Image (cartoon, rainbow, N blue to C red; front, side):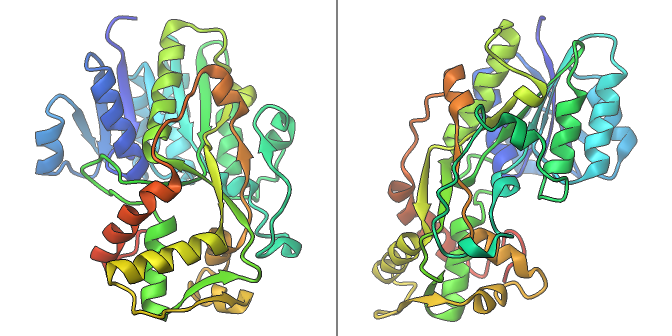
Length: 343
């Protein structure tokens, strides 16, 4: 393959924008096209060699054509949009040459938020992307993300190779010209400013897997490089499911730390308490989507990245605790703010 043609969705999102930036840095010879409603002047200035195809996730024909014209597709846009996924797969299926699709998903698919016995408690179950390969593939299609994840896995064949990368909660500042923050810490900062107390569910011992955004982008590039090299260690389809986790945190400890940081930085009053909330209190943070707050701050989502590390992924970004003060300050400075409509 000469200079590959790459099509990316979600190019100004927290994840997609960071992935795009990393690919531009590491593979300046790629011919890159991004799906966007419209390109901002900042985007054009920063990425003068990135072509833009105008459209939304609802524009089936636009996406299908862009995928058909590409050698590689990186789908980091609306990962739960069935029409977008179908358009990408349709475009790749129409190609006469071989192609590669890297699809983003998330560890919401393995959350125990529907198992009431674990609310605010630590669940000893840690999912492994090799040992639990079959169980992951056979998850109910009703769990978040998984219906489309199955489509992607099942579409892999000799002509179209597919890989799914599954990060957990992310932290750190994005390098994109678009959304620079994710939701875990920023939404929590917004919530405790509003409610004037830091909170956790029940005992607060529920564990969340976490990864720095820079480490995630390096896994995307590693997977791309392995594909281009024809490395036989890179697996595809149902075996090509890669967790991207580096650490995990208990939410009571996190809430306590954020409260302390907030008081030190001055966006929380001295003496702000850290308290246990009930399930009903937590659900009320997002009254129209009561399970969302429970998922983010009250459930367990634990995963082990055996497959990615076996492939050669070596995460080295700042730890969650090292990045937390900056993440908190940036979030506090941006109030009122809501990445996913919580507040």
